[in-house]
Image 1: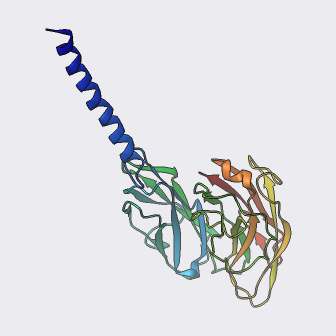
Image 2: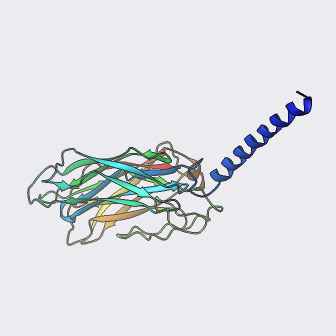
Image 3: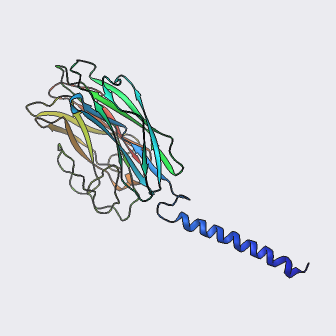
Length: 292
């Protein structure tokens, strides 16, 4: 065999291998492509509703790339039990390629008219993700706030922020809005859709709730404390007395995230509520965790 006849087959094989690598890289660069792209999903870590609410809703957020995929969820009784306290079956959530929307898991809450523990709970766990789905925060805890009691109580939920990559520099800090009973869902310039509902100016709506709506305004002290995330570097500290308007069971307190928070992953700061003017505080501390 001549030298030329030896070189040509080897060169041909090399060209084929190179073409395969280039084709694979090109596919991986396509939006939603399965070759290199993984969708991140996370469920609300904690959701509390009054028994009279009728429905408890978890949001399952999605970020990173919009790959096609699915994730299952399983439901486990805690002190709240089916069917007497709530109803929710196991299920599967699905996304097609390019779909960036969140999903919701809704439990029907039974108003039983019985005086029980102030907080009863169950869990929803994300599991069995498909090949190109990555679960970053799998467990959601549903809590039912008893309203068949003379006790008046307030509580606060753990929260998460599943961040999208930035498409432009963050907007400059803006003045914090006043607490309100309704969050403004407008996402703000300088960000892509942000599954934690960071609003204009990087304002994260953070709720707390009471078990019974009252006929007059009440107040709660709301404070933030450092964890892995630090006030002044990652978020703007809050220490204020917040009004619970007459007739409301949930109040939204705005917390401003600073640009450095958008570089963190799996880190948190803490919230503490106290001094509920109409009664007592139950489970009054919570975490806000940032995921990317």
